[in-house]
Amino acid sequence: MPASSLKETRPAEERVGSSFGTALAGYRFLMGDRNFLGLVAIAGFGIASFFVYLSSSSFILIDHYGLSPSVYSVFFSINAVAFIGMSQLTGLLSERFGLKRVVWVAVTGYASTMVVLFAVMATGIDRLDVMAALLFVGYGFLGLVIPTTSVLAMEEHGEIAGTASALMGTLHFAIGAVAMGVAGIFFDGTPLPMVAGITLCAVISFTLAKFTLGRTREAVEAPAE
Image (tube, rainbow, N blue to C red; front, side, top):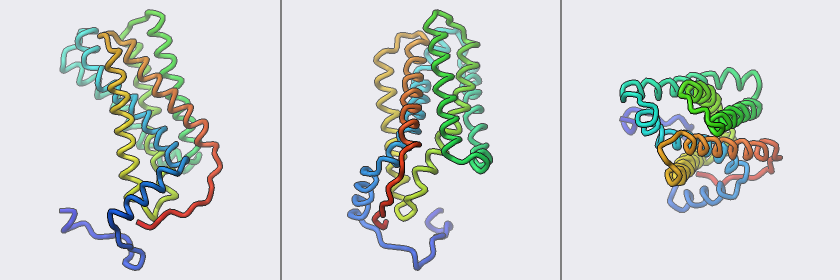
C-alpha cells in the first residue's frame, strides 16, 4: 500500500540517488557526530529503563505481589497512559519552552523520581502502591524525553534523514536489549533489582543530557542520502 498509494513529498529537484555506499557513508558520518550520538543515547537509556521494566514486571507483579494476569495488564497499561499522554504535550511544551529545556526538565524529573523509588525500595519499603505511583510519574517524564531528543538528533540531518532515523532506531533497541540482558542476570523475583536497573538507566540518561545539551555544535556538512 505505501508503494502504490503514498506519494513522495520531497521535490524532484531535491531528490538524490542512494546506494549501499551512500548509506555506509551516512552511517560513518553519523557515528562521528557526538551530538547525534549523545541525543540518541539519552533516549536509548530511557527506552532501556522501560525494557528492564518490561522484562521483569510480569514476574514481580504476578508472582511477588500476587496480581492476577488481568489486573497486571491494567497495571501495565496505566504506565502506558502516563507515557503516551505526556508525549502528546511535547509539541505544546517545546513551542513554549524550547526542545532542550523540555528535555532537560523531563530527564531530570525522570531520574529524580527513579532515584526516590530506588531509595524507598532499598530501605525495605516493599509496597506496590508506592512503586506504582512513582513509576507512573517517572514514565510520564519519559514520555517527554524520547520524542524531543529524537527531534533534536534529526534536526541537523535532513539530507540523510532516512539513514539517521534507521541508525537512531537501531541504537535505541540495541541499548535496550543489552540493558534488559544485564538486568536479567540480577533478577531474583523481588522488585529491587528491577528498580535498580531502571534507576541506573535513568541516571545514565540524565548524565548524558548534562553533557550533550550543553555542548556547542560544530558546523559540519552531511553527505547526501
